Amino acid sequence: CWDFLVPIDLDYKPKVDWDINCHVIHQLKTNLSKRQLRLFKKTCFGYFLDLPLVIVQIRVMHHLLMREVHHEVKNEMQFVVNDSRLRFGLGKFALVTGLKCKGDISIESIAENRLISKYFGTASMTFAQLADCFKKKKWETDDDALKIAVLYFVNSFLFSQLKTKAISRSYIDLVESGDFNNYPWGIDVYKATIDSCSNKFQDKPSFYRLGGFPLALQTWLYECCPSLDGHFADHLGNNKLPRILKWAVMGQIPNERVALQMCSLQRKQLKNITPTDDEKKQFDVRGLSFEIEVECTDSQPSQPDSFQVFGTQLPKTQSMPESTGGDSQPTNAEVMKELQALKLFVENKFEEVLAAIGRQSVKPEGNSAHKQQDDDLRSGKMLYM
Image (cartoon, rainbow, N blue to C red; front, side, top):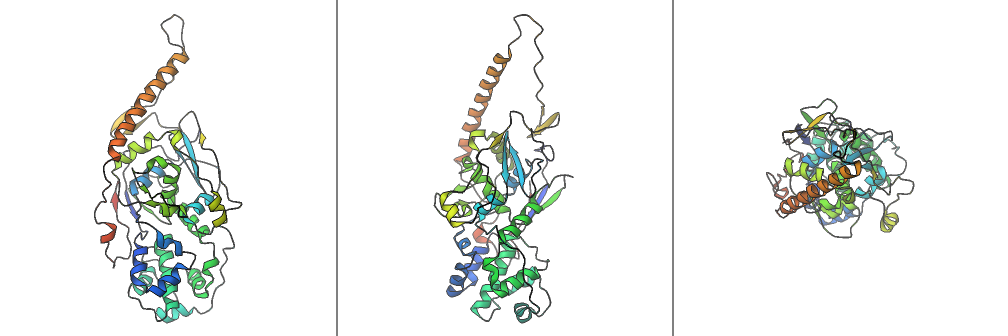
């Protein structure tokens, strides 16, 4: 049995903010010349230019994070979806993002950084200054355009940087030196992601923010639950790698629909992701951990005596009293048979309802991704659950 970090409360609906710039690919293609774009394509981040339209689905993320459980493994997140445990670690992150997740993360510092001196004139720069430089195309050479574009991509997309925060001097030195293509960015981005997304609800805050690269966690969920295809996101059916290139995510999903779908997932619909032969050839994942089987328990993680589902108080299931004799008491086998029949009936009804919902098109809330204002410093919006 695995214990949730906090008991699941489906009536807990805080405000959520996120700062990942999901329009960065459009901005790169708009702001860079054809030659500059070709240079970016050749970098370690070039494959992201093939990213389909995506957004962070806040309610999906919220319902996933509520299912985080206690565990003893360092530097990973574990979740129980119904009675199945799913583990999100560095290896899964590598398969989803394609970022290099092995290697030396030490960075050699530069005494005087030419890029900072030339374009910013200060000892440091904020993300707002970097965004202004990128959007106004203040560079003088194609090489500098590439460096500024890489810094903008890394900070606005992979790290969800706040506009008031200073850009890491180490990363500026790394990009200026040209060594950024060999750097294991996945290690840093993964750490930022789990540091920001793990254990969010200890004190039930009325507001929280998702930092790091939450799209990786969201895409991992879809890979673990292929039956969500067509409900929350659309699998494009292509053979592109990494896996984040396979999913288009264009709209927010109503909270009740997310809760219903997550609660109805069955054990047979869940899987842990493991590297394919093509992924083993393309990505260095040797030594990273992958579990083949989904771990299951016959009992749910510990819950309070009752919990809320759409405003209805449901009592915790009580054990059947032992028989005291006589023919009127059902046997354990009979009870289990009746429960299995009831379970099958409910599951079939869930599938009918969800199939009907799935036939409806997913409509984005508010402005479409295509209508995002180019002068926005970030694409994150405050959203009520």
